[in-house]
Length: 233
Ligand code: URA
Ligand code: URA
Image (tube, rainbow, N blue to C red; front, side, top):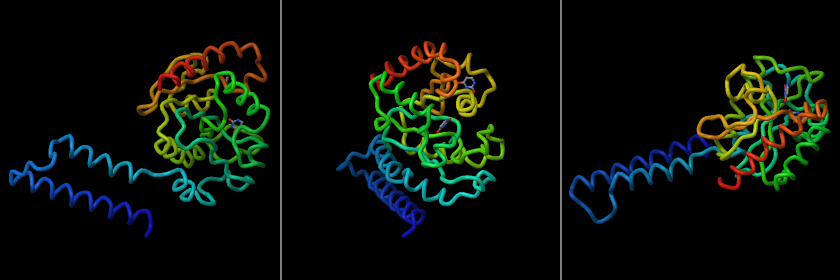
């Protein structure tokens, strides 16, 4: 059975059962809890069972040719880490090393990111790491609008599947794209913004820190806010 027909069956079964309970309630039956709350709980069961998993999203992405970046790529860089992470880190797009290895943030910027995580008591395995764009733009040029439009639905679905409590957007591109704003990263960073119902904190990109080490102090302040929220989440 395909995922679609399974989901439809599940949904129909739920509707049948819900209708039956409502009918019993109409007859005056009070033998089982038939409050609105019970019915809401029933809806919740179904929602959890119908939620997409990261594997389903990866399968749907397939050997993606939805934009021109597929022509030059070696690997799709989908994302790595804990599928139930409380914290997701989102970068821009794969670079050379990421394209070769198929994993995000494995180059010099990635090593710095791993050290930043360790400084707040986290490992790469605790969190989920991904990018706005899943294929390397030639020569690391900025992603173009048609590429963003083709790719970002997959990131949005990944975020819905993981349901993290916190997102850390790395750099101007990820922050501005997720928050749908042109405000400079220097003004966005350092405080929480809302992405759907998730708290999103923008900070500078680790590759920017490699070129501008004096900004490490800002990032240190930003990630301490993440650590504090993480411990409460
Ligand atoms: N820079 C990014 O934005 N993402 C990566 O995966 C690597 C470098
Ligand atoms: N510009 C960017 O694109 N990212 C940063 O992190 C800082 C400046």
